[in-house]
Image 1 (cartoon, one colour):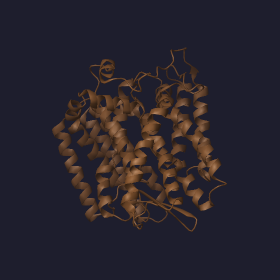
Image 2 (cartoon, one colour):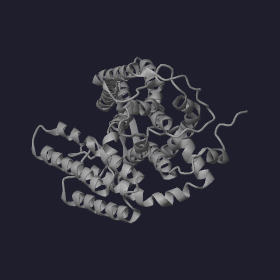
Image 3 (cartoon, one colour):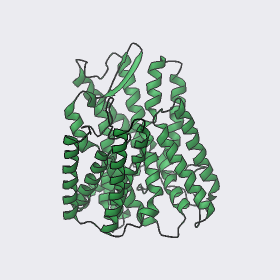
Image 4 (cartoon, one colour):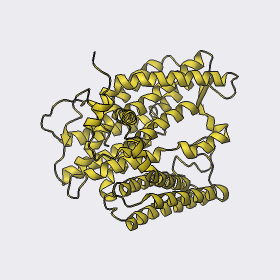
Length: 443
């Protein structure tokens, strides 16, 4: 019987001696944190044939405060930029570079969207409209990060120019001050709420720090000092400014910190990345342990699988519990028992899906894999622009999910991806993927 995963010794033998293991640990920990956060925070119930999808943040100041620790998505962008910058050189094909990374990123997304298309087609005639609509709306909400991440990857040629602390400081300051200006305008000028989406540039900040880390521009002592200062600034903004406590969006926030991002989120991204740089040597030492590195390597080989598929499990589990008369909601008397049961069930099902579906992430997808764009030029630019359009459409779709205008956004995303792939020439035949070999998420 074949082994499910390679042994620690096999993984160690396949790992280059100069690999920065801290990046892999930070990346998988950030995604596991997101999955656990969604699982613990999510609440729901059905009231008068309305599926109410909510979270514990709306009722607990303690949980809102914990988002200052649990909101670790900046670390994913940090790790992604650190892993990608060394793959870019001036004069390379921008479109080819971006396509190579998007090939791995979007490969499991196609399967994910196909699943939801079938699932929602089955659920639509079975569920009341106001139960179906929230399910469809939340189904692809987590794809926001994919759209933002594509935009960060598209900016790698620009981030590649960060070769000194001065350039890092200038780049971060420009974005930070720009976000500050946008926040001031949308707080004091009626009708400028949409201007807040310019603050999506916040995700370039962890990308910059990822490049700086890769190049050793910021030592641990300075990083720790920077993180402490920005944490103090964020606390001052919270105490004396217009910002609210939760770093995850909840209903009724005057100025959300996440969607769109606020100045508080920009400061949080700086602090998190600075603390990660300060902790990286200790993380690297910890990751030398065979079992730790085995878990990190295997986890990264199916990171997108775990991230994507935890959401349908979570949604459908909550829907099932609600119809069985065991909703997980703060107003229910059995909240703790149901919470423990749901968390245990989530861990088991997500683990099974990780094992079963991880090959879909690692094995080439016919018709999608294999495109190359050699050298700069119009073809390279067109491929890159189409992939950026796909990322932007993914971001825009989050507002509706797989319903209403979200369906048009998904159509644009798919059309842009198909167009980019058609413009890319097929690669030369290569040996197929080896299911038993651990692959690291490089995008």
